[in-house]
Image (cartoon, rainbow, N blue to C red):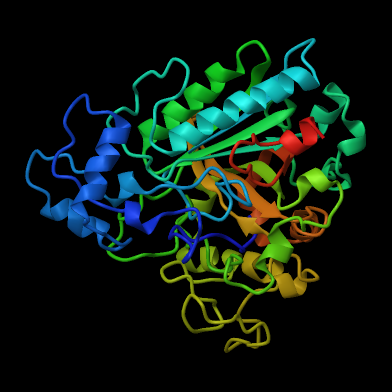
Length: 432
């Protein structure tokens, strides 16, 4: 779990959100359509920021069901990049991989991506799914819903597009920390769904599954969550299930080299990946019983940061640069040599950087009382061979955190650039 993680707050200036859509409504009447409810919210003109959302809840009349800033948040489906990459963490997520059905090829895949793109566009706008909408999300706004599509290594062989397979999509190498379940890894197609409302996210998952029809079958599916926006008194970096602040050193869209590190340049080959990115997906189980048996000081030594504030053990606050040369009273490094935060620093990995956008997960409790919980690790980069792979190799060689985690599933997916108006995702690949 590299230290380059993402904040739960929205990226300032992100084109994926419309500030004018953040509003409140004085009573969501039963049976009102999602579009009508959005119209009501927009008419009120009440704007709430990330910190103001809590005030909106507190001031609502008893019994009212206002469409708050959480419900009114909207991401754009059409654009230069696909949604679900640069947006902040979302409260609920679903990851699902599909394999094309026997006999399905390029034609069927194109029809499927066309259906999925239409559905995604409508749902992200707060409208009903075009086919057989279940009404699960009828009373909600878009809730910052994002739906993102990607292609796995095997997709290209199944569709006769091997010559269009990017070299960056070569299978990831084996790592010593891997305990992979192949049935829950990889896949021809990958879909990431995120929203700030659980019912909106589930409705999208169900619609995507139904749209697959006879063209593709589910290979694996995983559910995740994060803190709900507005749950804290002011915007804060999120915590993971180990209780650690997890998001301090993530690349930011405002960084001068952000696009170069995260997105494939327009001039790259293959051309259909222009403005796209590569997603590494890892299901990382946290061995929470072992972790929680450690003392606070031992936990902080493993990570290299204070648990309460996220500040480096070398001093300062959460955003203070880590002083790797500083020593303690015994002459030992203040930040231990094998601390997770030290090992994952880009300046210790040839500048390797990735945009992390994970979800926590909890899949129940085993018969022996052990929680099946951890991180659905998702990281984005222009080239995984220069992003994820070198960092994970270094973690394999001596990360103190490795004793407390287990990588149980893995996937690598090519995520093309966004679809323009009138296009579907992947059209330049499937019709090029």
